Image (cartoon, rainbow over all chains, first blue to last red; front, side, top):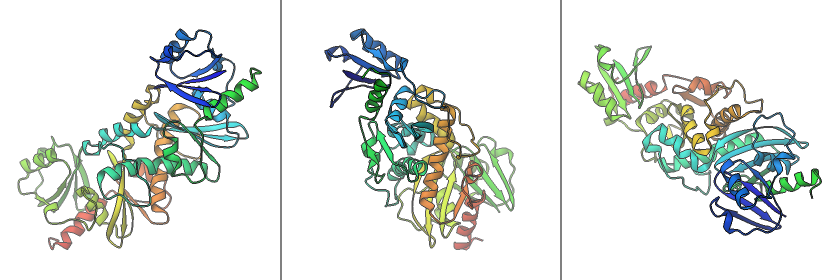
Length: 208
Length: 208
């Protein structure tokens, strides 16, 4: 069985312990043989997958998370499904922060992705359109504009996550998970989080 | 004497207790009679002021703040000059957060302005291009995309300020100061902060 998570930029796969990604255009070159279960937040990507693998099954039609949130993306639902208690952070082209308690989704908030902040700074003032710098620490206060911008991005994201988490465990997935988790002591970085949730969903509906 | 702070969007004035603002285009209609001391972060605005009031004096040429920060805007310098110990937040088209200790500037960071975040969300995903909603509280976790976006903006800014401030006093100025200060208990909102700093600078150089 192959699990597939169609995002806005890439299509991610899990086949057993093997994780791999593809662009929409290259899906046809993958030559996947096993049964595919997928989730999608991108209609174009879904169309591309189904064109090459017409038997692939959309897991969203069988399952949804217990929540009062209207419009919770299916990838967020799956990541949350993998966490009974704690904070779930998916750090990709947007950063979603969701709260789970006793397997119920309590709500969440959204920040821009690390690489997307530049567009807001550009609108603030042209001098603030600075390339993101992966600062190693937040202990040193910035003394120039470039550092001040990157520090602002990182420290506001980290402080927001910590403020919501308080003493609860923090689980991170997505492309910037590893970078952010370095600033969050005791956080757990799990790049399989969405796939773990998909497996739980498959079990719940008796398909695994 | 009239104090003048030329920003990127508006030109702000203080004449005694009277505060007023003008667009660059309307400066000529103000018919100001007193001596003008100004600071400027906008070359075009400065040109417009000097065209109508050629005797106006740029305070920046007489004064700068004690700091290791390279490229600290003169408006940030003046706001910081008004605070010996504490955190100085100027919340306008960008949000600057600066740390002052014993009248020395220790460094600072920069966030996009409240209204500028939308450009980053737009780059993250089109569904996240939501108009900013002035939430009244951060106690309730969002249950829809619009609230999740506004909550993300407000809570990340507030958490960033609080994290830097710890137990120090927080001083806010700028157009969004009042809105943000409602989320920061014991913070001090002072729309005159930049002008207070200008007055201190004038005293230091013996012009007041």
